[in-house]
Image (cartoon, rainbow over all chains, first blue to last red; front, side, top):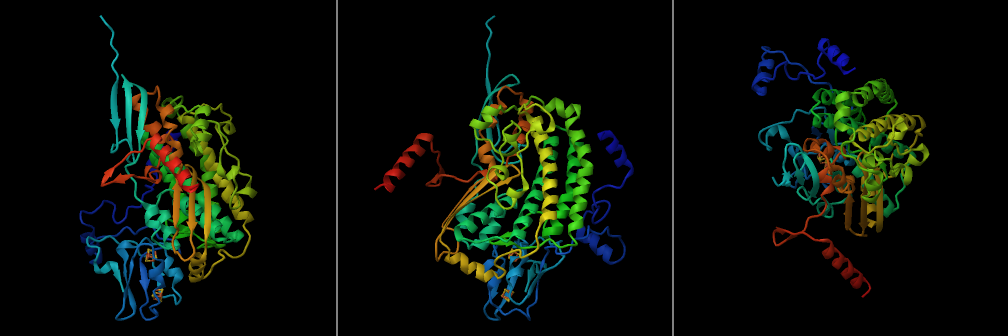
Length: 130
Length: 408
Ligand code: SF4
Ligand code: SF4
């Protein structure tokens, strides 16, 4: 039985999606730069479903500074900036529970489809939303 | 020549390639044969309850989710039950159905994950890859329904956070069909494979009496023929309407032997049972509200006023999990929070299971209860920076002291 499955597998496509390329590039950032210049081809990631809980998006204009999101966030991701009465989100700590999105009374927060969030520095600008 | 038999002690762990998590076994062996084992847990205590008592209840919910990465709905489901009991919160029927659906999806993925791990422990990596390939279908459905592959963040006090939309229903049905179609193949590869049978039949046997006396839970107990399942014995949510029955190898037409093979049988049967439950829930699920507190600030205010205690229990993929909470008015977090994970009850059964087995069987026997050490490690006694051990006598003395204190 298992042999049959294995033989069939020889002739079918691998189950793993070979993101970002068929063979893992030595440097992903270098590879992505090449993709940007049109010198390499990207194997796209598996699409995420609707309602995926990815990197937070913040609409500063709408935010009324009520701090409810800070109150419910389990991971102390969100900081209040008293001078502007706005918030700063440290995505590096986020657990993607979406509780802040649920609690926001004016819908200033949302979850995007972005999930490639690795960086060497936790204070990298790509990991701070404000 | 005088015959001398020497016994040796082999320590395995706390950090060992054969173990996924930290625990220490000390095996007494004679040649290849294991004479006895001493199990010492306590290496992965994280103090989660202590952290929880310093946060508000909504934050505690996500902390409880991180007690176990695999049972990442079992713990929140128990916690919300306990808090709902303490604070007198009702849960709308639709929310109860959704909780059951996600719990059963979790059982599906957890058992398939275990099947892969078990195959790997046997050195049958083809089967590991096959099981985990198949597991992706349920992971995709979890992601579809909740937005996360793990740590689904679905239950909330008084209901659930996401509804299942009509467009999502067919996707779930398709997954059920996919697994039903695969079921024959899966049980064939696991139960009729000579190498799996050779390595698991009559290995790591837990006799029914031992399972009963040592209070084994979950598939570990059921594989020894005990019909024991929280969903059947103490129905909660809508499990009472679902006629859930604890499954044992007898339901597969086999005689109960309580070995590792039987543990595979039980888990496979439970995969089929979960599929049936999910299908039934989807058919019977009524329309309506999914939470009794649509506004979170109102929920926080209600919880802050609440006073009382509650206990929640749930049949997690590995067995019974229990949470106890006490709420005090004016306090945002629980004043007491106690957690008991299934592995705690399944530790002692390891002792008879290892007896008289071979050294090479250690990994598969250890894996057969599907252990989760960091969920189980809930207490650590530290005095002046040094770990301390309390014996049975010490615990008894403290218990007597408490009685005296309470009775003045
Ligand atoms: S998603 Fe959860 S962890 Fe992340 S910022 Fe919002 S509340 Fe905090
Ligand atoms: S909950 Fe919404 S409005 Fe209030 S501070 Fe957070 S983002 Fe701003």
